[in-house]
Amino acid sequence: MAEPFYITTAISYPNGRPHIGHAYEAIAADAIARFQRQAGRDVRFQTGTDEHGLKMVQTARDRGVEVADLAAEMSSLFRAMCDDLNVSYDRFIRTTDADHYVASQAIWRAMEAAGDLYLDRYEGWYSVRDEAFYDEKELVVGEGGQKLSPQGTPVTWTAEETWFFRLSKYQQPLLDLYAANPDFIRPDARRNEIMRFVEGGLSDLSVSRTSFDWGVPVPGSPGHVMYVWVDALTNYLTGAGYPDGDQRYWPADLHLIGKDIVRFHAVYWPAFLLSAGIALPKSVFGHGFLLHRGEKMSKSVGNVVDPGDLAKAFGVDALRYFLLRDVSFGQDGSYSAEAIVTRVNAELANSFGNLAQRTLSFVAKNLGALPEAGRAEEADGLLMEEVFVAAAGLKTAFGDLMLSQGIEAWMRGVFACNQYIDAQAPWTLRKTDPERMHAVLRTLVRAIRILAIAILPVVPRGAGAILDQLGVEPDARDHAAIDDDGWYQRRIATGLPLAAPSPAFPRLELPVEVA
Image 1 (spheres, rainbow, N blue to C red):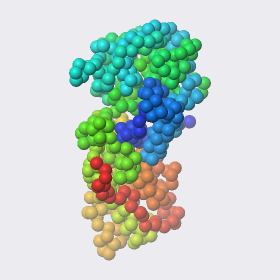
Image 2 (cartoon, helix red, strand yellow):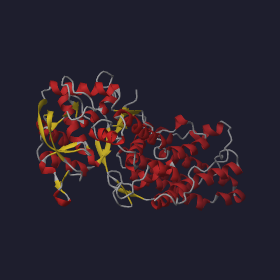
Image 3 (cartoon, rainbow, N blue to C red):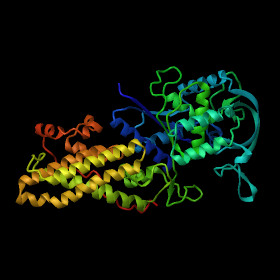
Image 4 (spheres, helix red, strand yellow):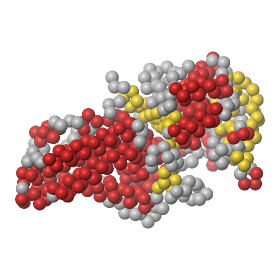
């Protein structure tokens, strides 16, 4: 049985429509999931929506609708975004799902049995927008002396009866965890921030609310619903079958989240799990923000862009390629329509797309089938070495979550192929040396197949189309297939023709209506 690999995104809070930040996280997680499937892992990929909490209640009230109806409507938009962006999730979880209620109440009972929950009165600062409580020492002063959260969101003084979790008890166990597992929090900048936060001391955490009833009921405590982060974080366990399934996918290999919620995943979540006696996830990766022309996206500024609009304007593969190529994974990145068009045309359309198109068109027009062996020369072997190195570079980088670096390594193989085809000039050899032409075209077809397999996690439709044109079967597109030297002869033996290809990566034009 294949080794499991469980990857999750954060579950999106659906009190508003999806934005490009949600799309970026989903695309990155999808590329990692597809890569791990190619590596032969038994992948479980989960995303979804976090539908409880005060913000949802307030948004529903403002719109004059039932909160459950709002949750269903908005959650469907996030699922549609994932489907439109070719995100290959295995489960789209909603925190309103029945099995999630069971899982949330099960971990609550486990923490209670450990003696880590107690009833008291909470008085302190609460941010509705963040769904988070903050100590006085964490607050910052805004314009006019207004108290704000560390994220710059408004806070209000809140007082109510609440259940508390003994987070303070887990300060040293958490520090020991970070010391023993340097990759538990990535990248290093996030790890350092969290360590400083925990070293500064942890206060017990309020984990229930009585001021609204839209949430998972606290077992045995009428009037209390779970504080949204207990409920939300438990979604990862729900998706792994907790508490009564086989749970073969737990512990999760990777929680992929935005850098603004690392604390909840790297402090609260492992503390809850330690309390409940449940294995900890292997790694939490906090990616950076996606900026529009270098500015943080904001409704007030008017630069929030619907990812569906970008996908329609540029194409899904083009958007995926740009985001994974241009943004150094783990750091903030910036996008604009001009940047997308420039990058995609230079690399995906003009370099790889054109390489495949002109090679396969030439073969189809002049041979009608894959080239014979022909007369090989040293340049052929040198090119194949460069292509194998490029594919290996992508594999190594993706395995270490260095996505943009992996694509850069892949591009070196593409550039080598273009230098080779220009130098060998098979269109000239057709008239002067047909035997040599066959060898050159055979080398290019083999190289294109390898490069297409390697880049499949990033641009699955376009790369898949090239492999379809070559007659590569869907079950022969994994990492092992890259090293399968027998593919070419088996393909020739079929006697199947090579039809004229359609462009897999057309050039983009700058849309007037997209900023």
